[in-house]
Length: 267
Length: 196
Image (cartoon, rainbow over all chains, first blue to last red):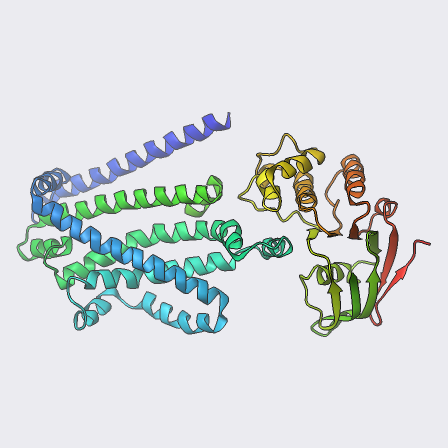
């Protein structure tokens, strides 16, 4: 009975999502039709055709691959550093006091300021990685810190009574407790990473990058191409997000974090 | 050996235990009774090494310790059997859960169990560990009257001959205790034997 209800709810959610997407594409098509100038607002059809044409060229895959590599590298470095920082700051109060203002400043500073400043020091091919790290790191750090602090003290006392080793404590208590926070951090950080990474590419124009193509489209008023590259970013972002979250959920299940808790964190 | 020497415990300005000394008997079930807030749970937490006294010292030469807390304290991401098997092998876990009448709930998560069932899993975990000494703090709270009778009987039978310290408000538990101590409040806390 519950399974049937849950399946029904899933189908309802998928149908609602498809209808919502179709609704907004319809709104876009309507506006585009009203404006009737491709260089001001290309239609969804023209955008898809432009993207299909781009996808036929090997350059498209090379450019997309390199942008993807930069952004994924940034995400991985930020996730690793954010987690390590969180482990230390959650346990050492002085370190937390020291790092908190810095993270607040990083979160509040406009990305453009960082990009322009960092351009003076960092190679333009590496800069998008640095910017992605800068944007993702505070999100991962604050979420994982909150996760570590949320660990049930009662369970740690149980671990103390039954003499759990440090490894056993980490696997049986810390990882399952922190995982929902970590998943939520990854989910919100992924979208931000793409925005920040592509913005950095637009401003520093690396040799092969989606951001550079977007900048060129703007310079040559190729609005349809600009939309096509933007659509490529959205598609890549969604695919990577789904793949990464799927992988992390599998890992979470392996660590005995129940499905309910993971989905609660993602809700 | 389990002894307390001039144990004092303060929470801010509030003195909970004051210069308490006592030497617990080995291989006996000792019940500690007393008014609410007198410091019974704090005392057991000190004995179990979970709480550091403000002053004084205690000696516990027992190796393996078990503790049945007032609340179940189960790992929510583990099934009943996995919870018990974190401290013992699976066969022992199965045996203890069956003894607690939970043979049909081995694969259920804590969220799928009632409060009383969760507490029984917690009891099974403490017993499966096969401790040298066991602390029990209101261990049967949350169990319905009939279940409580059966579970307490089983637990005390298993504890016979072991060193066990039980904090209880329930008269029924005292029947199983070899020694009954009343904790008098600070100042000058004392454990006074009242069973003879």
